[in-house]
Amino acid sequence: MDHTIRPIKGSEYAVLEDFLYEAIFIPEGVTPPPREIIYEPALQVYTAGFGSRSGDDCLVAEVNGKIVGAVWVRIMNDYGHIDDETPSFAVSLYKEYRDHGIGTALMKAMLGRLKQKGYKQASLAVQKENYAVKMYRKVGFEIFDENDEEYIMVCRL
Image (cartoon, rainbow, N blue to C red; front, side):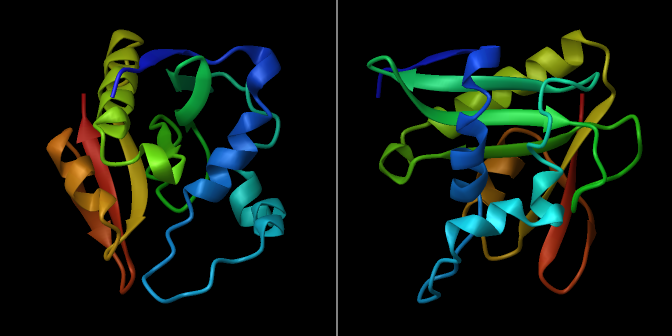
């Protein structure tokens, strides 16, 4: 699928709320939570005031001029927090644009940006049963820690 990856514009930050909701893993047969869940403090760390902190960075994927996916990083105390020097990843696509290589392309592009900026590693948290675990491994993430439900993964840059 033809797509373009570019940095997000400040006027587009609001779209991160859509992608935060899209990033929530819903296991097979489970009813999706209400969209308002993104306003819970544990999830607001990903988007509140995005662009105002050193280290906030986001790339979006466009298809035919429409933003269809985003990858963003922030140094934050989230589920995948390792330390205050390691940016945490969030990535998602609208459902109809998944499985076309766009997510992988977004991840690789952001990892390249982080390396260029001098970061040593990046982290993320992912539920063990999430299909995205394979993609994260493919782009270089390895299991750093785990609990009953999630892996904490790190990619050395």
